[in-house]
Structure formats: structure tokens, C-alpha cells
Amino acid sequence: MEHRDSGVAAVYQVRPISPEEHTRFLADHQTASFLQNPRWPAVKQEWQAQSLGVFDADAGPDSAPVAATLVLFRRLPVPAAVPLLGNKRLAYLAEGPVMDPAAVDLELLLPPLIAYLKTSGAFLIRMGLPSVLRRWEAKEVRRALAAGENTSIEELDPLEIDPAGAAQAEKWQRELRALGFKAPAPSTDFEAGQPQFQARIPLTDDAGAVLPIEDVLARMDQSSRRQTKKSTRSELEVSVGGESDLAAWHALYSETADRDDFTGRPLSYFQDMYRELNASPLSECTLYLAHFQDQLLAAAIYVRQGQFAWYVYGASSSEERKRYAPRALQLRQIEDSLAAGCRWYDLGGLSPSLDPEYPLAGLTRFKTTMGADVVQTLGEWDYPVNPLLAKAFNLYMSRR
Image: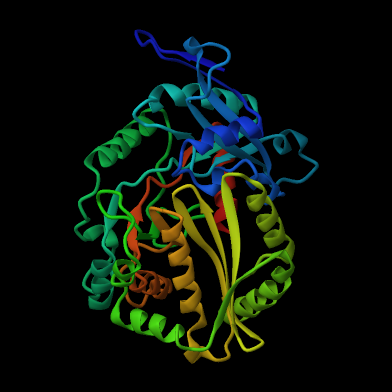
């Protein structure tokens, strides 16, 4: 697909690229999410996938892409008796497309990308461009949560962040609306995809230098620092597990799911994640284990790609809680992220609600006491190719 804009020299073409070409592109984009890794579709086996490159048509046939994205496709959940609808698919771009905002014009890039996805049967395009709108300091968020005087994080004064980055994100918002994309609806709950509000521990200073471990731990509240220090004196053996240890991980994870009343994933999911992300030259997936004598007390799955590290899954036993095994694993993950030169250690999503009684308030409290700032991303925007089907799909997802 090709797009030409009157009076503008840029001409972008969209076409499929191989996983190898996609991998080479991402190697030069160190802040790209592992959700854009071309090995990721082998983990999300219920989806179909395609790697797409965006090319400058004037740069020649052998040029490298100026942007790239992994697209996951999923068919409408309709009866087999309605084959026409069954051919329609959700096109999902998690944390994509990946590009250099200073070199690529989003307003010109998206029309050929939309056109390509339409021909692929998309009834809805859901896209979460990697960006940061605002950021709030951990200690200010936890103070506001304790006070109970505000209803939302958005009411607090944000930290000063890169003005150019914030201006770029705001420009993208205007361009997305002009192209017909719908902004994510305000919500205090977790969205179906990637939450708009994320908890991230900064690992570098404003100049980009890696922080000493003492400075990172100083971001924690007093209770978290005390428990973390206790964990280092609790006779725990912290180790890195292998694929053969995933069965033990899953038993502890299932125990955690039963205790905390959430639906867990099957063992095969974690086996696929471990194999696929470790098979990529871009990423690594690590299983951390904390034992007391022969008893597994805590385990965590950690992913690193480029300059980002993620605490993806955790599990813990109800036994020996005073040894603070989960804290020991968090400390190890922070240490390893610093050693790898990462900019951020991501603890995942949280709710923007500051109501101390809100069901998800405990998650916000825990992550900010760990020293995680709250960042607001652009969130996931929808382009309804078929508005009727898109509305029906969103209604279906809201009732799941």
C-alpha cells in the first residue's frame, strides 16, 4: 500500500517483512516493547500475526524500513454459521508501530497502514503507540493515596518530563483524532489490552547515567526498604531457574491464583514464553526462584529487551512470609536491570484512582511503595473500519 500527500514529498509504502528483517529493525530501537518482538506470536497462539514494514518509496528497493510493527489478528467470536462475519478480524498493534518520531511523520504513515489492514479483513484497528504523556513521582502518588483527598492521579501535578517528548505525544493525539481514531475511554479499571497508566521504576538519572542501587532503593518507602533489607538476611537462596523449573513455578503460581482469586494461565503459556523470548537475539526471559532450605517460597518471571525490563509475573507461598522472599526477588531483578544498563524497570499497569477504598488501590500502593513512578501513555486507540462490528465487539469484550 502507498500513500501520497499533496504538496508533501514523503511517500510511504507498507508491505510484509520477514521476522529476520523485523528483528534487525528492532535492534536499532532499544526502547521497543517485547510485545513487538516477532517471536511473541508463538506465545499468543490463539492469534494470527504478521510483521509489517513501512518504507520510504523514494529511498530505493533495498532500503531499510523507517517504521515497523507486529500486528496480531483475531477473528470475531461469531458462530460458524455466519462465515462472512467470521472472516473479519481485529487488528491489534500493541506498543506499535515502532519508529523514530523525529524522522517519521505519523500523519502520513498511518493512512497506508490503515489501507493495508483494511485489505487484510480488519473490522477494527486497535493501536497503542509507545509514548509518555505525563509522569508522577512515586512518593507524591502514595502520599495522595494515603490522604484520600483526590479522586484521580490526573488531579496531581506531574513531574517535569522531556518537553519534546510530551509535545510529540500531544501532536500524535491531534493527528490520531484527525484521522478518525477514537481515544481510550476514561476508566479506573484495567482496559482489555495494555493499561494506560503504568508503574515504572527509573534506573537512570536525567542525563541518562545508570543510578547506583542505593539511589533506586531510596525511592522505596520506609517499610519496603526495611522488608527488602530483611530479605537479604533471611537465609534465602535466590537462583536463576531453567525451563525444567517452570513446573515448580506453575505450581506456586496456581497456588497464588487460588489464594488471590484470579484466573491463571496454563503451564504451556510460560513454556512458550520462556523458549521464544530466549530464542530471540533481542530479548531474554528469566525465571527467578527464592528457596528457604528445600522449600520454594517465591518465583518471578522477568523479561528484558533493549533498555527496558519488565516484572511480568510473580508467585509466592503463604509459608515463611516473614522472610520476605518476594522482596528478595524484586531486589535481584532491579540489580540485574541496572547491570544490563536498562532505563526503566516496569512493574505493569495500575489504576489512576486515588480512592483508598477502591478495589485496585492496594496494587497502586504496593507499586509506588516500591519506588515506581506512574506514567500515563497514549493508551490504545481504536479505528473502527466497520463501526457496527466494532461496537458489537467492544460490547462483547465489556461483558466477558
